[in-house]
Amino acid sequence: MSMMLSNQTPYPIIDYLGRPIRLQLFVTYRLCIKNGYILALRHNQHQQALPNLLVKHAS
Image 1 (cartoon, one colour):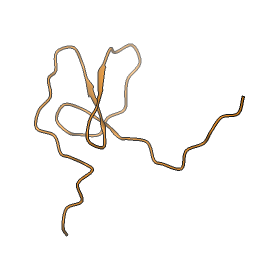
Image 2: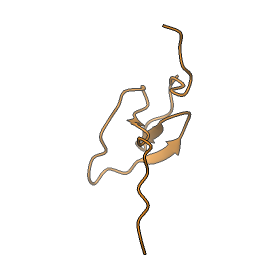
Image 3: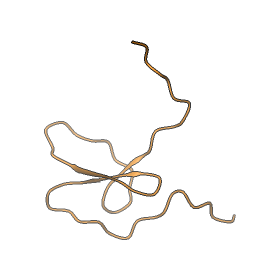
């Protein structure tokens, strides 16, 4: 069985405040795929206002 490699970049993992995080060992997260990122929530957290990372803003 061969493994297919993807040329796409992985989704960033974002906390409930919209900041990038790295998952920790021995911590339980609820993971939700959102618009261009993965939302990682701990048991006592809920989603705040988060950006839509798929929308390209005019610069």
